[in-house]
Length: 160
Image 1: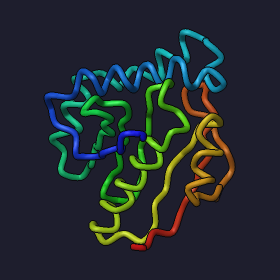
Image 2: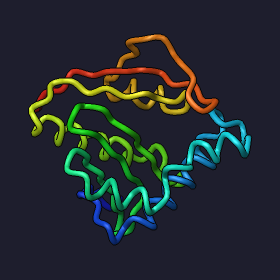
Image 3: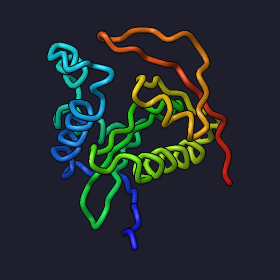
C-alpha cells in the first residue's frame, strides 16, 4: 500500500529543502523547456533561493505549501491571494504519483477560502498537460519569459 501524500503550509525551517526541490525539479524535470541551456536554467532559478523563499513565507499574500511522503518533502507549490498559482514543483522521482495534484488541490482550497472563484497560472510546455488534467484551460497567447514559453491558463474554482 502506498503512503498517503500529505500537504501542509511550508515553514521557514523548510526554506533550504524547498529551494533544492525547486532547483532539481527545474534542472531534471523541465529539460524540455530549458533544453539544458545553463543561462536559461540560471535565469529560471535566480529567484528561487532559500533567501527568497524565506521572504515569501513571511508575505501574508502568499501561500506556500509542501507535499510530504513519510514526512519527507517531495514537492512544493505557491499561490497568491489574487488567484495566481506561481509554481508547482515535484522531485522528478515522484512525478506522476499524485504529488502535484495534491499540491495544486491544496492551493485551490486556500484560494477558495480567500474568496476567489478562479485560478490563473502561466504553465511551461512541460507542465501544460498536467494542468490540463487538473481542469486548467489556455486562455491567451503563449509568450516568452527568460527564454521560456509561458502558456497562460485559468480554471474556475468550486468546493466539491
